[in-house]
Each structure stands twice: as C-alpha cells, then as structure tokens.
Length: 160
Image 1 (cartoon, rainbow, N blue to C red):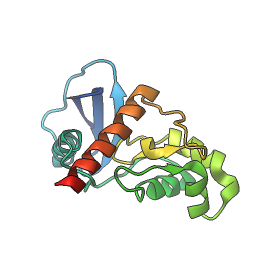
Image 2: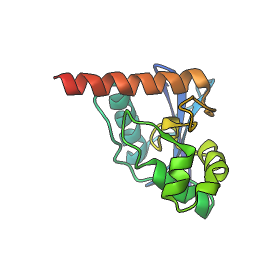
Image 3: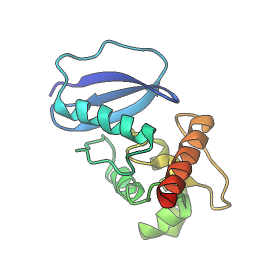
Image 4: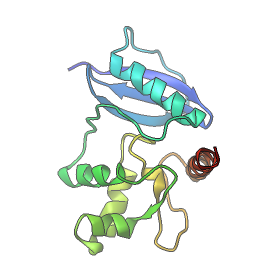
C-alpha cells in the first residue's frame, strides 16, 4: 500500500504527516520541508485541518482514522494516552495502573516515547509522578509549549 506525505508549518516547527490511502500512520516534527505527495488522500487533508484547528485553540479532540505501526503493548498504551483529556496531564504510573500493572511504568514510558502520532495521540500530556516534565521526542520546549497552549485554551473556554 502506498504512503503519502505532507509537511506543514506549525507554531512550534515543521511537522511531517504520513498516511496510507485511508489511515494516518505518523505525525512527527521535522527540520526541513519535503515535497508533498500529490494528490493528497482525504485523511491527510483532514489531519492538516484538525491540526490547524488545534494550534488555533479551537480543537480539543481529534477525529481521525489512525493506524500507527507498533507492538500490541505499544498500541494499548497509545489507546490509553488518547483517553487523557485536553489540558490535563497524567503520570506514567497512572497509565500503567490503567493498563493493569503499576510495575509497567517504564514500559509505558518507552511506548510513550515511540508514539509515531505526535499531538494526536497526546504523549506530551504524560509527566513524571512527581509532576515534573520528562522526555519528549519533539523536545522539551515543544512539550512545554503544548501543555501551556492547552491550559490557556482550556481556561479561555471556561471563561467564555
């Protein structure tokens, strides 16, 4: 099955989107613009639109067909990450508990770090149990920016 690519500019840098004909496969930060596949499948058009809305503060949840490559355990972790609400953080140990094993927090951390669908599967919302920010494949400054962005947008929507 063919893969399609789209690079988009965001407030925190370039992002490369990858899909097959019907499912989003990955979203990651990139350092250079590359040629966009033509024609674009609808899933990439919708992903770009929903990410633009997210960065504008008008989208809190994504509605996209995802098919990231990963092990069964990684997919379970990623499904659990999708349950973490916009503007809220959870710890690795909380995710592990939700999956049935508090001792799996390191494995959760590794699966979190291998999340191929940044932002849409919100791995940036996962922090250390002491409340401190921990690693993020896109860089700690981006993680901090994303969390602040979501907190501000959540606050605005509660005030108005």
